[in-house]
Figure 1 (cartoon, rainbow, N blue to C red):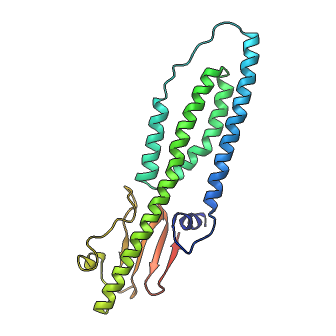
Figure 2: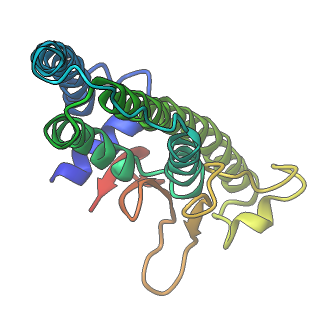
Figure 3: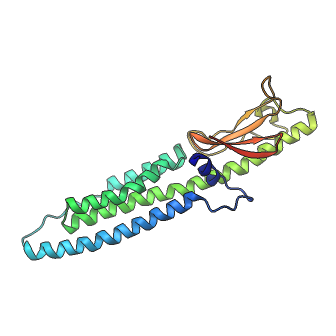
Length: 228
């Protein structure tokens, strides 16, 4: 059921004006992250003041390297935004950043170490958040290209009084090339099933939220449905 709702969210259409549950969830996560950051900063200041009063000796300074956080953010964005196009991994990272920061506050009470961990969390969070508008763009692109393919199939049917057996039959008269549904490494192609012994009416589909959440256009009903 959640995959169906998420597929509806990731599909951009003019008639769909519902406020998606995923946007509410993402907003709640972002508010929670801000709240946790503010709370942990205040706790860190209190602990720093207390530690400074009781231990005036010199403290060790952390080696301020953010390369690992930048690498993790880039890998997360590339994989979840352009390879898989899911958003699930980015969501898990956002959910886990709060506890990770709090654990660092408990484990490393000195402020320089905590600030470094907070910066790393902010960098990874930026990479994770950037995944979601990328996925929205993929959804918009898929919907736009699907309308082109549907129009081409209908034009073929109108001219030949039958539906094409495959999308390659539309080239080059009705389409210059078979378009890509989404520019992702996985689950980025359109799938088309022409008339056969099992069905007389063809249908077109693509993965809105892989590996499930398939959006299917039935040419007999002339409308979209969500499967899985």
